[in-house]
Figure 1 (cartoon, rainbow, N blue to C red):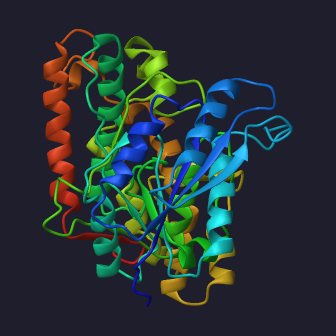
Figure 2 (cartoon, rainbow, N blue to C red; figure 1 turned 180 degrees about the vertical axis):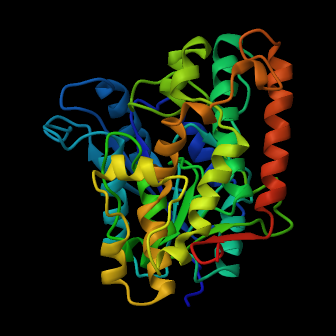
Length: 389
């Protein structure tokens, strides 16, 4: 397997003039210097962000102390038109440009302009991936800093706690899809990116589907390498209101704490246990149909009463069949199953904090507890489709 030495840092930019100088300074402070910065400055043709993006382009073209490659999808005649638009396409263009200019042993570090990280971040990334050169990707831990504006911090903490609670449920059952997908917290080598066929340029969720591809075709690093535990290996994206994507942290904060219960519920241990029980039955399904906790949902969702016999016909060993089952019952299906099973939703009263009324410091304490448990579970844990059996 390759030993990684050079990094391509990929950042989409839309109206980020306030954040871009800070991002450049963070990169200047990096102890690891073998990297190139790739930026895609983008907006709709004649749309939001044009003037600010022109200032970002001018700033990037003035940089002399960092290697910078600029993709201009902002200037007149270069902006997005038609269906090909948004952050998903910006990331796709960035990754394709990197593929054109580098070999398979290049590491891609995906970031957003509003993301903070320590001066040893790139060094930690290289060390981690060199410790696991056969792994497809690294889903980097994240932590939204408080803004000290309750109107922003309360919904941000509600949304982040939802994501952490969900990830913990998946980690506890050993799910191969135990990752949190943030475009600002992904690392992968080009050989793995090429193998999965690249990113699907959606308007939102493109990061989730890319990591899911990595999980289906190999392993995602789920561990820390000392001495970076809890330090260099954490990125800190801003928790800010945003309508640039249809879902995620920005839209969740814009939605507000009062409106999150239906979209972002907390799920019970019983729900995750039902997912694990389904996965545990995959080897037995190779010999014939048995009922799993997820069978009725999957039949309805996939519009079929014959879930498993096509897989038996196509995969002639138990190992390959089990892998195919895990690919079919993937991270999207798990989330859909839990979300569409009301019995698995926790009520607000059953949670240890009241997100509507408790002071923000108590919500932050709960967030820190979830984060600490996540770190404990992620430490020395490598997530792979084969570890369940």
